Length: 145
Image (cartoon, rainbow, N blue to C red; front, side, top):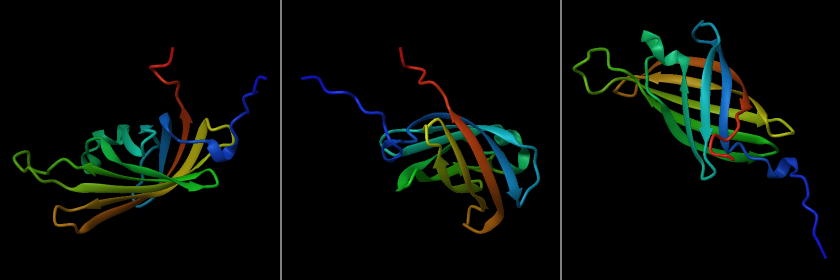
């Protein structure tokens, strides 16, 4: 007796994978839309890098954090990025805390998200709050045959 494979339903969809997206700031700072690449690992780790890192006011490295499944095709991710110090001899610069909630499409190949990016001084004082939206599509796994 053979068993048929069933198509994955929305409850079994995951954001695990590599995504290419467009980020649009909606409040706090006016910039043209820019590209971002997201990696969400199956074990809940998250990473992001984007074109915005080249701008002096927002210079930072790659963001690292965690994601979690909120149910109903919604996921939340939280990232921390280390900012570039104002003086090159400083070892401590600002940090960026990024929190976003995303909604996965029914086929699992696209998502939309909205969130906040907070710039904090080394002492933890909030310097800037930016609201943003993201649209992204899943990329093919580079290791897949």
